[in-house]
Image 1 (spheres, one colour):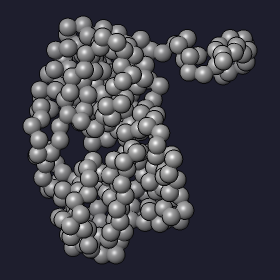
Image 2 (image 1 turned 90 degrees about the horizontal axis):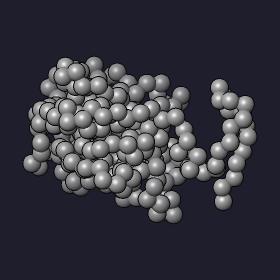
Image 3 (image 1 turned 45 degrees about the vertical axis):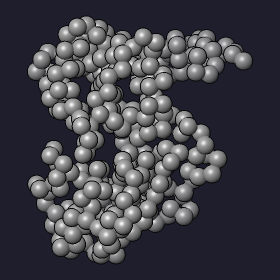
Length: 289
């Protein structure tokens, strides 16, 4: 049942009469998604309920969605009727469009006067090449907007009962990509510096090269008994969590082939998982998150 209310909210007028529930959002002054614009939007780590209001607004306003492989298909159920869907996912070892192809497509669609939603998993600026796409859009004089999303390296950890920071274990966290633009282990990383830079290291796209990364960290002085947690399909009903140590990480991956996409966490962020592991049982049955 809907009801009206009169209340003082921030800088809004003295009297605000609105319906209750989600329908009250229909009257909110969301920014206009203009023709010829590209919005780069983060859809969050997987669970549809973790996307932002601006992400939902973009889905309801766009003419075309150019989406990545890590976007949960259930989120696309909320795109407005008649909008086009274009898959532009890149997954290792599989036929994929090149980054230049994707960027040129965004520019071409915008020049046709389309409202272009570039939808990415997680956050568009966290190892998502969103910055590169914006550079090309700016060079082509295409107007754009950035809508941040919850990144798996923080939000995904929360769904696994892990804290990216904790005052008893770490006051810093280091985010690292597990492969370079060519899909190889990052060659430009200063592994000796990384090994001591932070008590907790959160790595994206690192399962394939975890054995090599572990060796580099061990040779740089990181302890072999440092915990390693592999979080697969974060925030999804089929989320999986595996635990090993840095010294055994390479052999563990070879023997168990953890599902991807996955986040790899090195360090003691998982120390309280037995107490904080809340995402289980009936909570896993809700597809919204």
